[in-house]
Each structure stands twice: as structure tokens, then as C-alpha cells.
Image 1 (cartoon, helix red, strand yellow):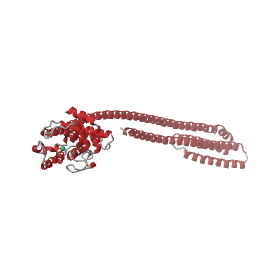
Image 2 (spheres, helix red, strand yellow):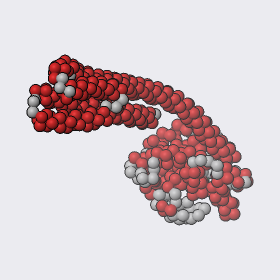
Image 3 (cartoon, rainbow, N blue to C red):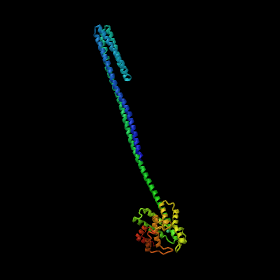
Image 4 (cartoon, rainbow, N blue to C red):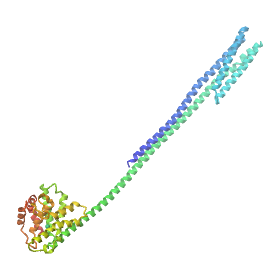
Length: 447
Ligand SMILES: [Fe+2]
């Protein structure tokens, strides 16, 4: 899409270069025509000077012959003869030089006419001199008056012929210049039309490509949206399935314990309340992000998943455990971590996997380090497990078990309060007690 203007620019530059080149060629031809025009004018001036010189010399020669006819002195006559020879020699030299300039076409034709007139004049001058030498003065005067003048008058017509010929050459040159100028104008106009046409075509093409790309972009965006929507739907189904599996596993464990799944629901609700209140009060607020709380609520149901490895004899024993039985029971924490590792190892959400393992492994750890299965203390115990511990113990206290009756809520709250700083994280215990009414409502509604 962005390349179209570059193409237009290249076409315009190329066409402009072609236009400039064409104009340079035509300028070259114009210069040549101008040079020829100048040459014609220079040659015309020089040729006219030659013809004027020939005319002047012929008039001088004719005047010399006239004086020669009037002279009676023999010595003067000889002098006239000498002068006449010199003039004639000068005339011949001038005509020879003139002949070298008048080559080809009309010029050569003009030269032959000038030469023919001079030859006729020279012939009659010879006759005049011959009559003069023979003493036939009347015949000589007749020749001078009647036979030489016609040739002299022809020189003027030859000059007119030179003018006419020069004007014709100049007109031809000007016509040629007009033709070149006309061709130049046509080429320039054609090139301008080509440039405008190309710009219009490229612009239309560019708009067309842009429009096509825009439609294609919209189509791709729609397809992408549809695919994203399908992926989101699939992810939601996967999450629902995953949640269903988690809840199903937790309920399965509880059903062995004679419960109906309420413990899972209640502990998840308490965990949610505690975590959100902690965040609201600014306690562990840097850890308790919205994502962290959502993962914790989903991980809570799996806290006792390790009980699947505990035998029914121990799990359903109505009385107190022997030390050996208690040791066996304590294993459910670490077994829970292992089961979660094995069952959910392929989960993309590794943060959830790690949190679920922490909750299972450490929900029986105590703040003072007297818990199991690692004996962690204080903030070494993951926060999720510390929150889970409060929720789990509180619900265990107020629930009926095979080995005990449910404890009154007030007493359960008292035990939580008394165990703050020993069993439970004191901050979390304090937060839990601060939402006592909310917890009570939830506990009563679930009963
Ligand atoms: Fe447990």
C-alpha cells in the first residue's frame, strides 16, 4: 500500500527525464537551424560585397574605356591600355574568388549568370578596343554606348536574384524552425498528457489497492475475532471442565468421610472472604492480587485431596488416633501435593498448579512451627496455606465428624482467637475475626 506513491514518483521522474531529454534534442536542432540562419546572412553579406565589387570594377572599366575613346594622345592611350589590363585582371581575380564561394544549387546558377554577363561584357570590350586600335572610332563609340551598358544593367538584376535567393533560404530555415518548434510543442504536450495519465492511473490503482487491503484487513479481523471467540469458548469449557474435575475430586474425598461436599463449599467461601478482607485492609495486599485470590478459591477444594491415600480405618475412625494412626493421617498433606503434581502437571496455568500444591502440602503447618508436614513457621509458610489453615480449622470445628459433634460458632471463633500467633498467622486470624458476622451468615446459610 505504501509502495504505490513511490511507483508514482518513479514514473513521474522517469517521464520528466524523458521530457527533458526530448527538449534537449530539439534544442540541439534549433541551435543548428539558428547557426545555419546566421551563416546564410553572413554569406549573403560577403557575396553581395563581391558582386558590388564586380559591379564597381565593371563600371570603372567602362568609364576607362569611354575616356580612352576620347583621348588623342598616344602616350595616354598606352596608359589607358595598361590601366584597362590591370582592371580586367583584377576583375578576373575577383570572379575566380567569387566562383569558389558559389557552389551548388541556386548559388552556382547565380555565379554562371554573373560569369556569363561578365564574359559578354568582356567580349564587347575586346571588340571596342579592336575598333579603337583600327581607327574605327564611330564603331568603338557605338559599342561603348550600346553594347556594354546592357551587361552592366544586368548586374543589378543579379543582385536582385541574390536577394531573392537569400530570402528564400532564410524562409526555408524559418519554416524548418517552425516545424521543429511545432514538433517540440507536440512532444511536450504528449509527455504532459502521459504524466497526467500515469498519475491518474497510479492514484486510482493506489486507491483501489488501499480499498482492497482495507476490505481484506476487515475480513481478517472478523476471522480473527471469530477464532478468538471460539478459543475463548473452548478455554472457558476447559476451565469449567477443570473446575468440575477439581470439585468432583474434592467431593469424592469428602464422601469417603461421610460428608456431602459442604465442607468444600464452605472452606472455599471462607478463604474468599478472608483473602478479600485482607486485601481491603491492606494486609498482604501486594500478594493478594485479584488473580491470586481467584486461584486460591479454586485451589482450596483440593487441600485434602491426599486423604484418598488414607485408609478407611483411619479416616472413618470414630475415636482418637493412636500416634501411629496420626502419623499416617499426617501424610495426606504431602500425598495431596504429589497427587496434584501428577494429575494437573499438564495445566498451562503453572501458578495455579503451584498454589494448589502449596495449599495441599502446607495447610496443616502452624505459625509457631509445630505443624506438619515440613514444620515451617511464620511467613515461611505460603500465604495461601496460612489462609487455608484458618478456614479449614474453623469449618472442622463447627462441622459434625464421625468422632465429634459440631462446636458452637462462638467457641470456634474463640479457639481461632486463642490460636492466633501459635497455630495461625495473627494478622490473618485478626482479619477473620473482623468479618465474624459475614462468616457467621455464611456458616448458618450452609448448615
Ligand atoms: Fe487436611
